Every structure is written in C-alpha cells, then in structure tokens.
Length: 78
Image 1 (tube, rainbow, N blue to C red):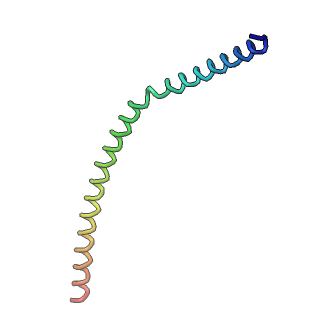
Image 2: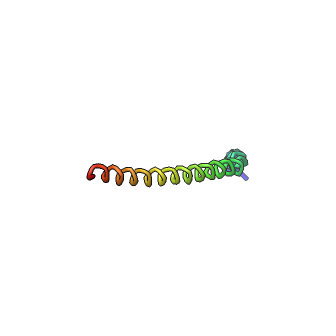
C-alpha cells in the first residue's frame, strides 16, 4: 500500500470509529424508553378515567338543565 492509501485507510477507520460511538450513544439513550412509555400509559389511563367521570357529570348536569328549562317554561306559561 502506498502512503496515500494508508492515510485513507486510517481516515476511514477514524470515521467508522466516530460513527460507531455516535450509534452507541444514541442506543444508550433508548434504554429509558420502555420505562417512559410505561409511565405515559399509566398517565393516559388516569386521563381516560378522568374523562369518563367528566362526561358523566356533564351528562347529569345537562339532564338537570333540561329539567330546569322545562320547569321554568311551565311556570312562565301558568
């Protein structure tokens, strides 16, 4: 091999080493993903439960408001 080929090989090896380090660093950041997803799922379950409760209250209030409207209308026409 010529000196030029040797320099190119060294440069290529350094570049591959740098890319390998970047890949390993990126993969290291992924180790926390499963735990984070579990926490997100738990929070979403709580949100779902809260939304169901809110819907039930809104439905109840809506029924009461309809009843009040009917009663007021009946009183006004009496």
